[in-house]
Image (cartoon, rainbow, N blue to C red; front, side, top):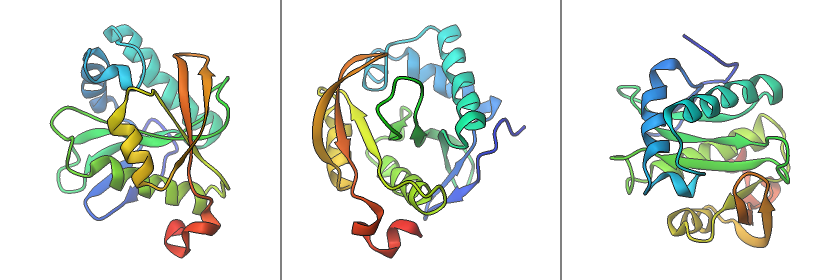
Length: 180
């Protein structure tokens, strides 16, 4: 059952689609993991994960964008999240990502974030994006750099404390493939 107005985007290996109820268990498992969750936010109980999951669905309806489910194009298995996030208190629209256990180290986050950024610049017409990253989240810091983002400043994330704000290249500096 479709819960959002999210488009279905494809990349070479991945499908980016709106969240569905069948994705919730994998998301709740991620948020309960004391190793993985802190790079994205606090460790959550299942009921708190439900609120975040429902908040993302509402975010799609309010803004027309949000976090996509990253799914394997062949079998539609949920592998993580990537998309554009801009809740109340955020400095500006953020390109974010997370990968569920068992799917890390395969280029999933890079491929999904690249496709989500193309959509944000090409279809939404956004002119700038940031990624807000904990300084201790070294994997996300490396990915932001691989995506061409540069460190801009530290800021006080209203939900999680001190974050680093990384600025993505503007669409006109990336060439036509940025809007593909």
